[in-house]
Amino acid sequence: MLWRHGAGAETEIAVVHRPRYDDWSLPKGKLDPGETTPVAAVRELAEETGFAAVLGRFLTRVEYTVGGGDKTVDYFSARAGEGGFVPNEEVDELRWLSPGDAATLLSYDTDRGVLHAFLELPADLTTVLLVRHAKAGSRENWTGDDDLRPLSAAGQRQADGLRPLARAFGADRVFSAPRLRCVQTVRGVADDLGIDVAHEALLSEEGYTDDPAGAVARLLAIAGGGGTPLVCSQGGVIPGLVRALAERDGVRLPATKADGGVASKKGSLWLLSFATSATGGNGNGPRLVAAHYLPSPLPSPAVRLSETP
Image (cartoon, rainbow, N blue to C red; front, side, top):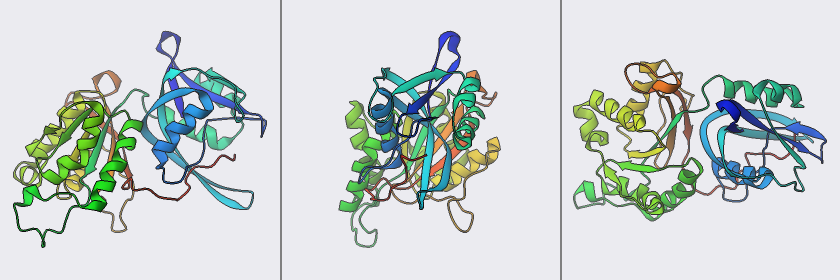
């Protein structure tokens, strides 16, 4: 859902008119082959509205049946950047409206539900992308120092897929546990930004085991630095770290495993949204307010977004 700060810093919502359906809706689209949902969302927003966008927290998933088929639409908060609307084949009018006016104009209750989900939290949040390193060669078949075990060919493809995903969320800083496979997972993102990967010993499995509270504090300090940091860690760290943050701040985690555990498959990431002192944080630093799990960004032909109402 595309938003911006209007006059007086009031939040405005983009609502579009689609001549094909003669309706007013939130912008949405569908995946191109090999796209992830967040990357498709940014592309579709640019095509329909003319605005570049930076994604924030996950809002909700809408599922419905139309034309005899099942449709699924995933919505993210999307802050508008540079650009300007030009009428096109899919959208002939765009209006920037207050949330109340947007709710009145929207044609569908499902879109009003998305708007309600957006309004449950402040628009300006800090996003942390917490990534588990991509696939590496087998530990059993590696005879050298395990710290130097590199990514496999499949892992390199996962790392390559992370780069457009990081751009979709506007990643601007890169941190990693000091393991070669972790650093290799995020090095492409750092190269795209023209920066170095900062090593974080506390976010390695050994560092976390020795000082879990210190690891939580370090991640909170990274979040407190603002922007959109990308942090790569390991499978022995991420589930406990995410669970500790959720318990600390009273966030209910989405169900990501059948046994109720916190998923952290290789190449996947947690989208962690934090409120700062200016947007609802507390005296203990940034406060986790939302968490969403995204699977590995390996290319997939699955269609997750729909053009139809």
